[in-house]
Image (cartoon, rainbow, N blue to C red; front, top):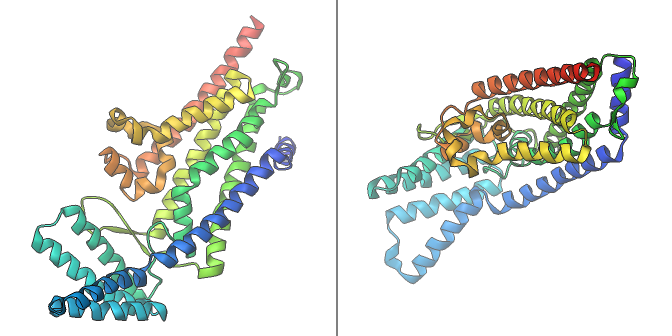
Length: 369
């Protein structure tokens, strides 16, 4: 069995249909990182302070009475923020940025601003307080450039594309190779068909999960090479009823990797089952991708499903958006949690495997009968 598994793995990784998509995915990581770098250069504490500072300067030139103690103190702290950031004194930049953030919070509360606006500023405040205390680079959400933050952004935004690429070019061909001219070639091998299918399942799991972890290491290593590994305790803003709530990015990454790994395994067993039903590579790929895509987009398109959306395995591909609360806000379903995700995905994997075994047995009975 081990020799057969190794043979299958070698056969997969040497195929152009595996190599080319993997090269494109890894190349896209480099492109994404370059894009994040450009975005981070245009959107950071210094740029935000500079924009407000420039606006206030123009107002002062137009009307000298515009300057009061509030504006004067604000401009002074913004100037210090810009200088400190450019000198890579992150703690000092955060300390002065905190001053203007507190001003904004106070102004909104005094003016009766919306709760969500106040919550956003309080979340920013929590992050700035951490940066000031630990003197770490003040990352901007979605524009991560250090190891941990860039990896989290990559898994948040681009994981589904990796998911579909491996399904189409890796998973389905593994399970449909045995069907030649409408016949199941496994019947010619002196070995139980269920055992042969389990071996293919094992092969797919090893190749796909290994590729996923190589992608993680590549993304993390690339960002770390240029900007350091970052801080595993850097706070990620959680969108929930607790204003200013955060979670360490390291904890978020561990949970994301667990859910996404289980999502990959769930996709593999589903691909195998559909392949055995259709006996056609193209049809199996089309149906598998279709079923999975419907599960992914369900929270954003089918609002009638929101009350039971936590029961749909494919939803947990969006693991980071579940963990940071953004998907919970969209669906208004607080049952979208890490623990529920683990339970649902494990249940789905076991059920589909049992369905596949049952289908094999039914097929054998029909062939004998």
